[in-house]
Length: 418
Image 1 (cartoon, one colour):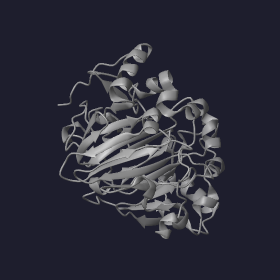
Image 2: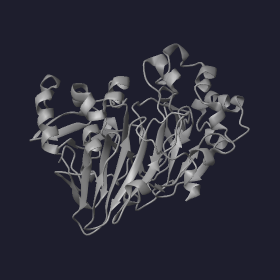
Image 3: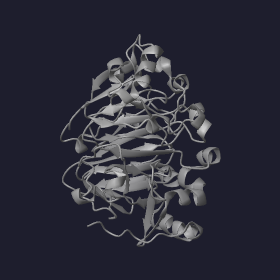
């Protein structure tokens, strides 16, 4: 049975408990697990949710295949709960939304410059974990998402070895379109939507997924993520358009193609195809321009600990998000001092971060609190946070950052220089 979560503090009363939590944690905030279902996917069992709780939202809502981290972004699901996708801070047996905390003390939590520009924590990350592939789809570019009052969504992937003991059904991801593909060929796929498999994968190429590597996916680029459990730092939006009509025998409704397009354009095939970034989709050097391998950050590594860039590079010249993987050996400790806030999730081992315990759970009941997730505020990051491994195996944590944080962010392809 699922567990009743701690009581929620209303938005109007967040200021006092937030100050208490920041003081107690010295700028660190404990976050509780945020679970998200997807009605059109087949969840699997690597994100540590208890097997009896995969349909905790109800079978009609679909199984839970995602866990979101440090999120102030709502999940764009039909029949969603009022707080679906939103992270909660836990303090003294009560919880409150991270989104409300940022609204209350944005300068302290995410930094003055970021809060002044965005008025919110503009990014989030998640694990998604499926038995098979996701339909070939894209996320709108910023200018296209704006047509329906949303924001575009570039995203990135990293495949943590700790969560990928098995490949599941399809350990490959179709990305983009084969060079030479024409818009007329793609239009034919949309015209054939209701005839069965619309054949869009015949126009694409699949890349085998490799644990410990990743990809950077700009908006407007088609992709059909495969069946490795994936860590996904991304922009704070949940827009998408599905371009594949049948996946593993499951029908994909047309509504999931056009859900984030103006209603008067829902049957305008030229408009729909026009939302793709065509040049990026038919790029003859797609892998060179989108593939990621970890790069050691020598400035923030030392005896007993190694910090690696796992998501880096820019999207259309802009540093929108990035991510790192910290490994601390048994008995070692280090001090993280950085120029921006981050959301942290522990994927292996146990230890401490400042005054907060870190513990990787083996299994989590729906509604249960854990000790694996932390929000590192901008003020704590600037001051420096001590992380210690108190266990017998490596302590490994993934953390992601918002825009324009790093002066030393590697460029795409820099892993080849190692």
